[in-house]
Image (cartoon, rainbow, N blue to C red; front, side):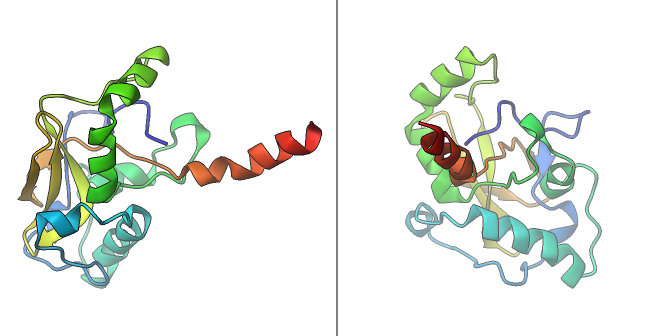
Length: 170
């Protein structure tokens, strides 16, 4: 499930991957140096947890505009189990952006951009992370202390108990 709107810090439109994690390998986060391999990374939830834990492990503070700092208080729809998608997950969003944008329009959400990139939770190197460019599907990357857009996601499986209850009632 994709968030209805782009994540922001309430002031700026774009966020840092990890301003204070620049030039740092995040502990317990796989470094992916190949774009094709990055497309197979679907570990967004685990990646996000590793990034958050990485701040503490590296004795770094989150900047107020870091994507994980914004995620800490994000509760779209009353849910708090959102995370930053891995590159493979973003690639799937790009591959289905026409249908997703149609659905987002129907609920008065912000469509996925066709002119800029979104951060993934997939790390490329000590100073950079993967970005999915939604204009032409470019596999790209940016410096962790640069700012780009972020779109939080949550697992649709979180809805499974509700579906099971509906089936029980039928």
